Image 1 (cartoon, rainbow, N blue to C red):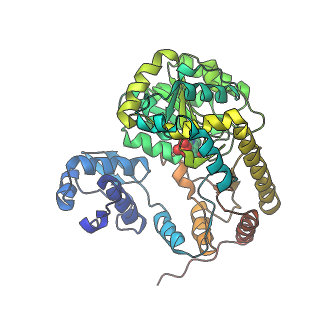
Image 2 (cartoon, helix red, strand yellow):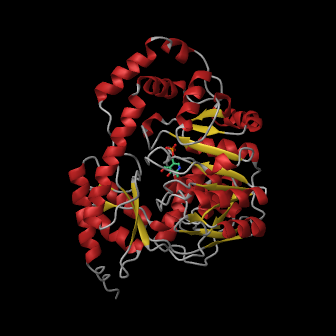
Image 3 (tube, protein in one colour):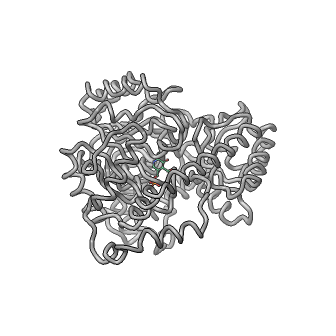
Length: 460
Ligand SMILES: Cc1ncc(COP(=O)(O)O)c(C=O)c1O
């Protein structure tokens, strides 16, 4: 048994997460092989000096990461040997000059001067009151109204009382699911999905089932079949600049998906986090489902990820139960980011920053087009790059880190391990600080892809 107490003695993380990480490491280095049975929860809990519930949670989290299979309590087995992303991540963090093509954020276009000047103005009148009181759970009325105007721009009509303010998209998804569903319910998701949402829903003990997609996004027939086969209660999708594929679902597909949702009595959770980035886009699917859709989004990709400002747009009759769930999760999000955002919107600065981000993304798309022969779609800060036949995604991640380029493993986006690992890699274009550095990193990536993968060291 290769997990020790010392493996999980990391004060910064909850114990269940530390155990799941230790399991991932142990599987990654081959201490547990595919098909191997993990120790019973009770035995491992005793050995590590933690509760049975903690180990249970760790196993569920490891399952949601696609590492394990089986029923917790009856027998949990190692699913497949993933490549060595955890170790690569550590190696990359240690390396002096690593170009980060992993973190999917917009290029930083803000200056200290404009942030401090606008924050001072935003807080000049009423700042003390803002900090001196608990805000209402759903947010202050004027902030909700500001966000209602903001979502109106993407073709989603909303009133202030339909908007709830959150601390980013994760709490928006969590509050929606806790209010509308029960742990153990099945949520259908795109077969490739933002891993943060997948892990969150796994931690909350929802079951996830994949829906097949094509070049236009989720397939209506596959959604209907998955809903029937698994008794799905909800569908979580990101139809505008999907992460990782950057696909934007066209309007006619959105209408078909809305129909399937209606026919199968599903809740739609539409993650629109990239929705303000394209200059033109179809209206959200949620528009077609006013009684059974929740739009979750935030300002991370279009204005400033550090604001941690997210929001939910919900049917009026669901606002009460989502507010209760949100209160359980975080009492209320801080009103400071919303105050700053409202000020930015009133002064036109929000439009101006969004314009600068769009322009910076456009320049980076062009660099990607020149150097990789493929640019992401309009507004997308990430590219889903198909790989030449000789390369697998896992091999590329390993070799890239040797060249000082940090890429995400492609199977982190997968839900369920039945499909083969995707033969593409997500390249996030916004994190590298400068365009020249991005060009260097993409040039090195191109050079790597132009050669066959180096032979692995002989094993004797
Ligand atoms: C689809 C999707 N949803 C949500 C998020 C995270 O949003 P937030 O910054 O609000 O946590 C991301 C971040 O990459 C994402 O890709």
